[in-house]
Length: 368
Image 1 (tube, rainbow, N blue to C red):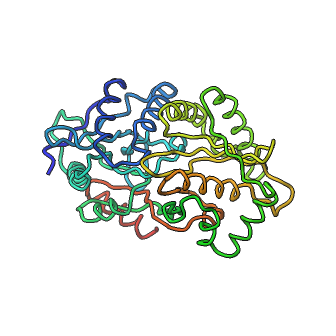
Image 2 (cartoon, rainbow, N blue to C red):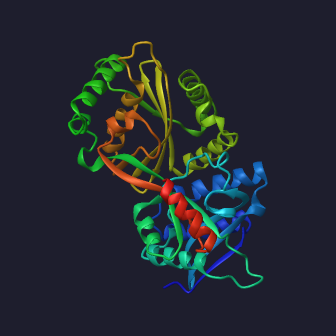
Image 3 (tube, one colour):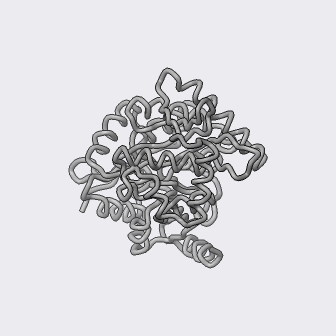
């Protein structure tokens, strides 16, 4: 069992980067707990929102650090937690946290995942000594795995699930880049739509996939923004991801770092001289995370550039030996059409059990 949990003010980012990356090398975490994501997020919220004073580093130790997370603290009324709460690897402002962190378990050294989570949960439940850095009475946790949620249920904590998301994914090891074999796992209607879209967009040719390089990053991001915003304004009346005031700055930092280390790719799906779509994907430890996309839409409603672009990417990544293509959280009929497997992520609130939190969380659970 770990010998201690501590919560300290956020250290200088260059020191945190060194310690975080050292632990990352000893872990089996997701892209969303990698320094590429965490570092770009911290750079953004500190420089753009001066948020350092509201961020703390939570560390679980067993001689040396075996787990880490950033805890954002927010003093605002939040149901059912109450006046003050913390947010794991977020700042706790729903408007600004809309950069969609998922697969957000603790960054923990391999073999220490369960014991580290147990130590953190015990720390939340315990009474603090005067003068210690206080963990908020409630914690909001986004994008948590089913295994972690089951572990939380076993503790004497106030607990509620705010949202559960069924996330579709594709097992790339089954098909090894053979698009026809991949399509054979889908429904007949999905196969028909994809094949028709591929034929109308690309004829008898294969989609041409280009990967953005640093020299074209600025222009490719501008193309992505224009296509993304145009489509969202036409379909939903707002700017999509760009409605978040931090998204564009964060995205540029994230992609600049990720292209340099190979963990982020912008895929441009082309038909001859026509740009059909752009996919922003995270590439990490065998998984491809389909983060954002933008497509050129057509008046002919038989043409579905989204499913055609993703199908082309799935075949490409399968041929390159990747293991999973994850569509992640968010509603989308195309995810149901293209995904062959499913996993569930949870958005939860947990709190120290008090008379107040037991009452409010009981009401929340009844209403959910």
